[in-house]
Length: 229
Image (cartoon, rainbow, N blue to C red):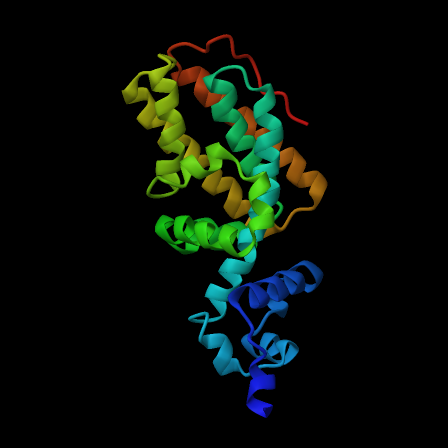
């Protein structure tokens, strides 16, 4: 009886949900396997039955942080009228969230390979079906590609198909914008700017993308500038 009560029939969802609560309340550094086990009334060994280590537990807990990104995409795409709106708009939505949650986005998009993210997302929506209503079709399509630059190149391919850019120039666009993002993202991680500074960085990042697009595009398709919030 005592052993039965000790393990409580806890699931991966239970551990993930509690870890996410702690992250929101106290930050990622407040999470430890020992603490989660103690609060859930189980042993550390039972937690390791579900997760390889603390990093994997954090990874699943942080997946919920992408819901704001998906909601932002859902809202923004209603105003997109051409391929360049889509291209710049996706980067705008992504940077708005990534710059505000650098620890989570670094863990989700750069620490592990894309297969981990794609498979984990599927499992996440099985565990948290209430979140699937906000799921965005473009987001899931991008996850089918192999890596960070590969996801951007899927958007570049949309521009190629629309005859908005030549393939050779699209390869350059892909490389330049991805490297540009990584530079901005590292600055955010290192300097930890406040919200006002982040807003300014996002705006500058988007305007930098637009300069690159104007330099490389074959046809802007009527695109002038992205309307940011």
